[in-house]
Length: 213
Image (cartoon, rainbow, N blue to C red):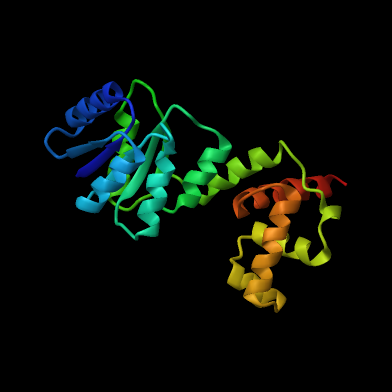
């Protein structure tokens, strides 16, 4: 397994590397990077099965590396291994398109090794259900003001929560794709979110309120 280990603390990288080499014995080759720029350089010059990413990398984030992998259609799968976990970061990891697992750092590297093996084989331990749970957690901290949205905007928000893509919403509501995108931008601004997963979380929570009423 070819691995890119991305962490801005050299001592931490050394510890993780030693632990992984012990866990995998000889079936692993680990390269190191201490920043987003170093990681991208490594990805452009080498081929990796898995990238292990810390979230906090000085001025950047490990998710910047994950997005680079997705945007450039690289085969590398990512495992986030970080001391920072929040619903918003879980959602961002899921939406990056290349993160297969999200783990918190602890003294035991066995879960990391298992996640890396699964990622290298094409399996994901970070699912839509995880993103939905994180979005619901965020949604419970706020509220969707349905009255602030027009009837059309509310229809689009509901369909987003049902998991429809922009093209599927366009077909369902008989709207131009550009109209759907423009309405979605307006909805984000009105409710104060920046992604469809967060919007879906607000809608799911508001549905619970409607059920109670």
